[in-house]
Amino acid sequence: MSQNEAKRLAAEKAIEYVEDGMIVGVGTGSTVAFFIDALARIKHRIAGTVSSSDQSTERLRAHGIEVMELNNTGDLALYVDGADECDPHKRLIKGGGAALTREKIIAEASEKFVCIIDPAKLVPVLGKFPLPVEVIPMARSLAARQILAFTGGQPVWRDGVVTDNGNVIIDVHGLSITDPVAMERELSQIPGVVSVGLFARRPADVVIIGGEPPRLL
Ligand code: 5RP
Image (cartoon, rainbow, N blue to C red; front, side, top):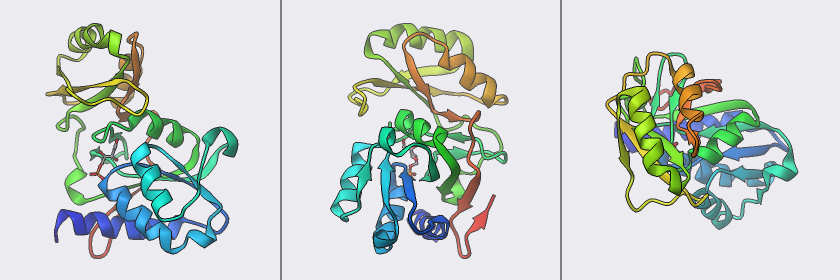
């Protein structure tokens, strides 16, 4: 089965978590794009969505799905998003699509976080996928030096990428993250770091691994 087909099957399965009248938190990426397309089929049943990126907002609106402000909705019952890596404890690396900050805000505001992935995203230990860190532009070099000193990983500026929040991304290569909660906490304290693409303090609640049939973690 192709990776795209596995993504689509995971996204279709996530529709089972959507209940009538819900406001659904929506992540970002190619797996989520399949989820948005599936959500369009039942859009009359939901109250609306909260989006984690301009990219997802555009796709939701193109389907005629209402996009609401998190400040107006309060906490959400459900958040559906993809990931770049997932360990056996449902801790994630996210931010390959540079939307990590808004994704982390919505995950935190949500009662249930359903993560949709293809099997290639499953890893025993996080870190093979370069860890994205969103940084305020003037702190880029400082943050890179401190990330190197703390992690020993190689920080690489994602040249040409500006996040929806006007910031830059540093991808940290060569990590083997045995304590993701501690690394998330420590890197988040570097001045100028807006958010770290580790979702360990608030991991996913359910992980759907696309396949025939989909598997749950
Ligand atoms: C965006 C993300 C995505 O969820 C992650 O990059 C996975 O993307 P895809 O579904 O395209 O494989 O974190 O910031």
